[in-house]
Length: 451
Image (cartoon, rainbow, N blue to C red; front, top):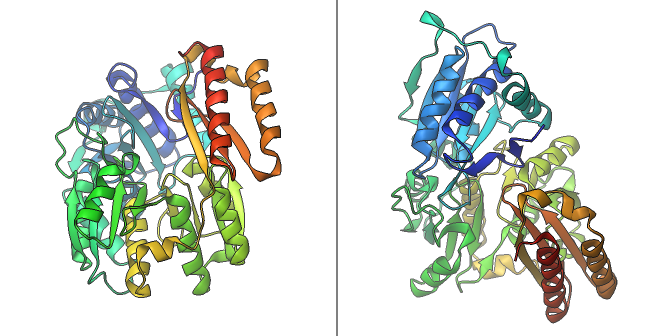
């Protein structure tokens, strides 16, 4: 059975791949699976980002939810973590976010949350897939008075903002911060949140028109924010992605502070307060080797997961840890949230900046990044998972790992959200790792016919 769900929900080109019909089917199947043991009439919260296709997919998804007898509460444009938080706060039975996160406008996606606010396990997603792909006859439609109702929550954004504000001790007075909202979900909440905490805010890319989400802006395109911070003499810059579940930063000199460095800052701060549970941070296989060096110097344990914030979360729950995240800016504070939250991360970072009296560059200087090069290679559908079994590709990878020896590493993996293979090499010699990445990427492209 083909999988509908990747590492972050169902995703594809809106309307043609992630069709309205499929959105309706996901709404029906998810409502049945997530609420099947409940004796009351269930309520499912539905949020969305700003892309043009979110409205039509919302209409289809909500129709599916209500057609099997569940009620749908429409939250409007909110960040993904707001849905997770509100599910718990409202006592709802499940939550859905319509977003393709950092992807460009033609894509969209559907992310599902249980009544605990956590993303779904593989087992539950597989049960939803089974109903849609194998056993659609098991989906019983309601009629008459048993059809679900649609309601609207106009206070969702404000409730989320107030919740995040309460996580900060003190305020952000005196901090000049540039905020890149990626023309996405953060546009609905960022100004109220950061201005409300006392910061002087400069918002950029905060004019969503349905077509400009993530367009040369946000956490995947940091150049504009870097320039803005330098030219406007800001203390720090913050960039979100389309649904604001990830966050990256820029120091006062316009230099990138990525997720690895942010986790290092958070881990050190929590450790000094005696609040870093089990003295451990959870990171992924993509995390820079410099983080391990930082952690060893500061007496912090490191646990490594597969790429994807859901896998980071699994390790955190298994080990009882409260901090984890990814280089891309998905950072989870398990004491405050059940999923990666870009605006929560930003508030935490600015709070440390405010209380330390240091510059952002000083805070980020606690971790040195080793040179790391990454390249994406387009992957034709027929080669999905199959490239791993190609002798020539694997031979090139093995030969180059021998060149690096113990001073570096190579990681080649398939993206969970896009039709790409990501090739990464890391080591102390930039020229060498750059050459290695180019060679492996060229071989994959050649063998898979993606030139």
